[in-house]
Image (cartoon, rainbow, N blue to C red; front, side, top):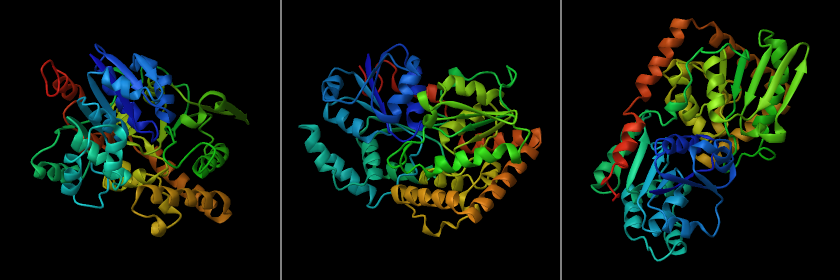
Length: 412
């Protein structure tokens, strides 16, 4: 069976989830199609797919030659697959996050009237929908939806159930590559501190524009040896440091290495590095929990990180997390994806260039790190278990096996 796959171009989270599902389907021909940060991840992890292709005019023909489509929050790919009359699985770790400006029933009605004569007509039919609403529409049009558990998701699940029709919705636990997890502590640590910034790129953020967060982080890392001499070797990982952007900086006997590692190599570092700071994305968090590691959350890069940290605010992870609101009130951060992310970019820029704000940022960062390092092994284990209880669910391997079993829904 040929399965065409794609992921939303927002950091590494969606495509990492797609790779996890893909590895569960190794007996089939798995064709990744995409560009941008998602394609960068796919190329860096080629063992997850059998073929990697860019988005081009050949997508329609590729879909027509496929047996099934898997989309990790890529609404456009899902819509193209529906027009090509192929069964679609939507994979989504943020199912409860998408904000709707109109009743779900109205979106369902639009989907029911979707023209399938071609992609252009279908796209125009859904033009009134916001980007978030288009993702929800993609779920309604899908054959199956695989949704990752998260606090508050029950409300969205109830909304879908109340419609009385739609996809088969499968609630699952962590959508991660469990087969690639190393044994924690199996190797001696190469670094004292691991800083994981994720893919970073999305609909607004980039390495050279709207990049105040990266510039602020680099300034903070320059100060780190003075504040924390115990961190003699630091590894900073993420999309911004791929290829020629990678480098190693040495000063006063201390070394900071910037790299973008293949996922399984990154997980090896997560398993063995004593201190772990990460951008608060759900995929990276689930991977840390699977390795029995409690990370410290870095400041929010985009609005979904604000959402995540707030929803987990009652956990040890949420209470210890770094927040820009420690320094700057969130009065001007809209409860909306693009505008909220743009506001965070402005905040990062202000903190980076205002010496008083930067001094406050540095103090609060140090306080968070100190508290994190002071946690006892028992406290860390309880913090991991707490999140596992909140975020747990049916193993994704079981869900995927059920969907893709011979004769399953949408399969022949």
